[in-house]
Image 1: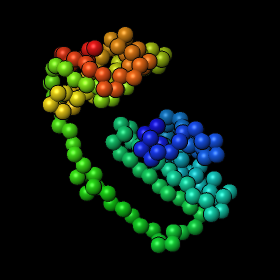
Image 2 (image 1 turned 180 degrees about the horizontal axis):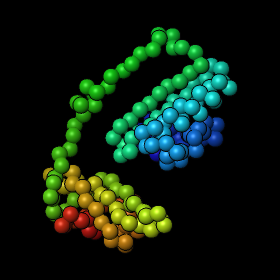
Image 3 (image 1 turned 90 degrees about the horizontal axis):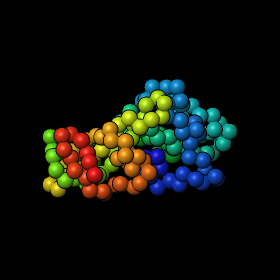
Image 4 (image 1 turned 60 degrees about the vertical axis):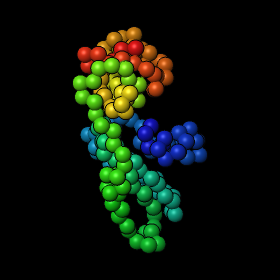
Length: 167
């Protein structure tokens, strides 16, 4: 759901489906190859829609690599252009990491990982310290993992101790 949020694209517009591959996690391909399945489906759809356009978006395993492709049934008027955005990316502010941090923090984001049977296994939490550093922590506390799944805890205060997050 990262690309639609970033682009402001509605996820529930029946006139413009969000995905051409069903939104499956991997669709049989390795993590960084999933977008190949999207491109193949987009090509098929465009062949049936002369004058149409389609956008593909993909991310790598941990949302650290991004790709986008804009496809159409005719060449662009100005020809193909490649944009190198690395300079702009490098200029964005970066948060420093608070390694070994212990103390109060605020949840920035989190995810709960499940085992193959669907049971909660571990939650990973990125939290901001009072000095605006980022610290990475985790928890195996089932009550806390349940709260992370059922409540909106972004911005919630927590404590980090011994590498674990606690409410």
